[in-house]
Length: 398
Image 1 (cartoon, rainbow, N blue to C red):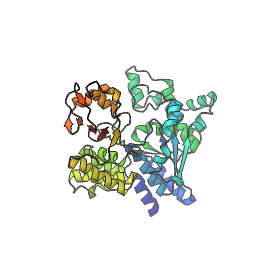
Image 2: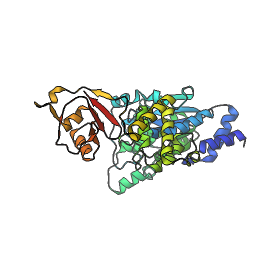
Image 3: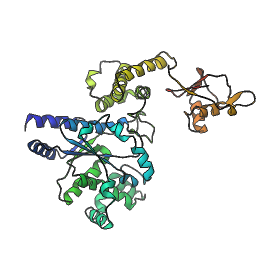
Image 4: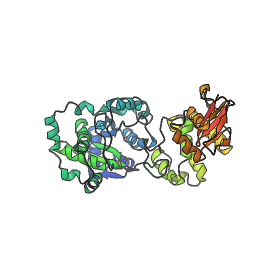
């Protein structure tokens, strides 16, 4: 084996949870080098939300490694399969999305993707290209190549079956549709999270059934979110978006549990964790926050975000730039006061009165630096009112 192939495998294996099978990867790399033909690396993009998160960046960064080795990233946007809904690791049938929702979510994806990937070595494909034209005869042909018994080998399906929880036929179609994506783009390697391993294995079988060489499987760990418990998810609210404002990224990173720092450095940056273990945990976290803001914005934004964070939290000062909201005077009573819950709703930072009450109960609201401890208060409106909600949200009411 040549040194270049050995180096490529070392780079590819770094941070990977599964590589199936390694021998096939070696064979593909050798052939690619000999023919001077790049491998086609497939990564599915689920348009279930409008933002890409640091969790999404884990497979995207591995894809960038493969691009730097000379290979082609083929991003398959699941605009068709998202109409079904991926049942992976779900305990019940997943809600389907409308075509309009999917289109809205896709609108900002390209700009976010190319913060990480090389656009010159990237193809973006939509699986509606080849799945929409399929006839019912085609679907029968695809489904004939896999069995229900094999489908039930998947943990989430087998557990739901054992518990007498419903599994729709539609959900069985999802792994087959995703597998057919690999056939359509002639994938050499499929990359994604560990939760996709079963679907990727189906892809190997379906490619083989259609006379193609099976794809190699590369999985990367699912990143734990800011709550320190669940995998990062926009629906859970424990996420950091790569297109969020610098101050938001910095503040959210500073809020993560200390035990997450090693995995965040390892999977989200090029910094070796051993290089920062001698730092105090707070300094280590600041280095992580600064690095991530610099990656997705620039050094100046990272410096400003750190200074603002220090001003607000270390020195207990207010931020230099605060959103101003003009209060609708119709909300005031004859005494010029306003119920504190209505005032919080007027900030635009809180979605409901119940959420406002909950934040007050949690001591998460202050007005002009005074903690609010009761939701029965009426506040005398004497603008400006400086309102802090949670740890990082500030509004000036005028």
